[in-house]
Image 1 (spheres, rainbow, N blue to C red):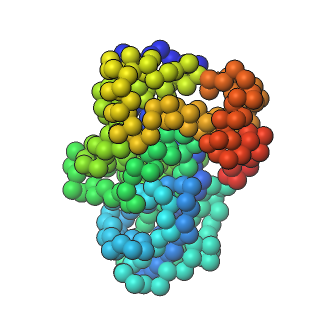
Image 2: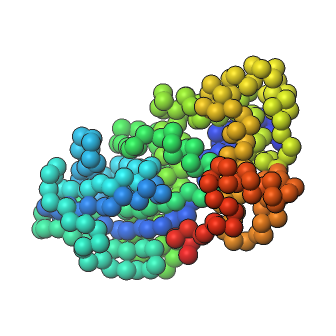
Image 3: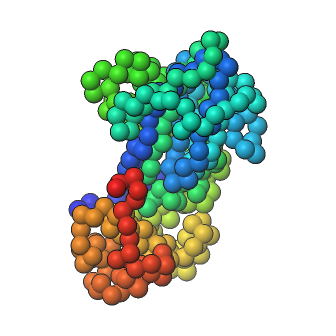
Length: 317
């Protein structure tokens, strides 16, 4: 159901609200120094680690080792392969080469390493299923590190981490659900914190969302993709002339407004087709196409395949 058009602007908040996460994998890791763990790339996922006790190092190819201490949170938005080690350069066997205790389909416990100082982490991989995720991930750095000890104002992070650590330690009935929900909240909050603090978040798609006029146009397209938008109606909503709006939109977003709308509709339709809960005609109408043929042409132009060729993601299967 389409909500009312926004009268006050929070396009960025709405975009984050759209990001429905699907947890792919969660693991409680208990290490003893010396230790090492190599995680494979998961390029369609965001991977994160929360250090609940002790310390370790994060190694990503092409970057300096990153020290992680108790209470730290690190997010790899594009799911690059990486290593967690007790010291830089330590041997790191692959995740799937180590024995793991399978608690449920999506939750495991990993114990590995020697008799030295202990380190505990909550690790996870989440997938965003909304079209906004593609734009967001492209705008993010390769690694987001939040040093909780250096940011005393982040009370939400401290309390969430303590709660997550307690649940992971005992895993009472329902504990897996609590951990996964907390992980979702922490990932979204970490993204909000980065967006508020990072200068690079003022440019590109993220910057456009925070622009009063262009952000309004984006929010309207996001909320009501089926509306018969034109460049003129979008410019009117943004209280700009048609030419000024077209130029500023292209400059900030990196593509013309109508091209953005086309891609938004198609990626939104892709997510709905993958969910397999609606027929083709219903999906087409839901993103602004009265004709299945016109929808199929637009779909193929953007994605290079027909709507009928769409398969459900492996994780959903």
